[in-house]
Length: 75
Figure 1: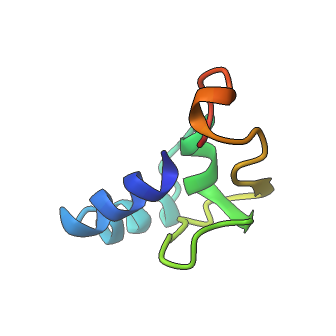
Figure 2: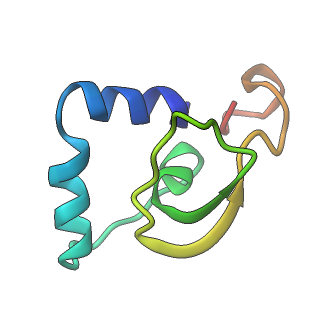
């Protein structure tokens, strides 16, 4: 879940170093929650959730409903 991942990155003090690496051109790839964390525009996101804004895409969080209804993608 992208919100939990964002919180864990903050608590472990990994968000900013990883953001710096991404900004410097580190190759990246993300699906489901990873794509949400990398997107520069997140629709229906949580207000306490940060994004790396590393890929110029718009994603919608919770597009498929709750986790148990989404066939393995984002909650």
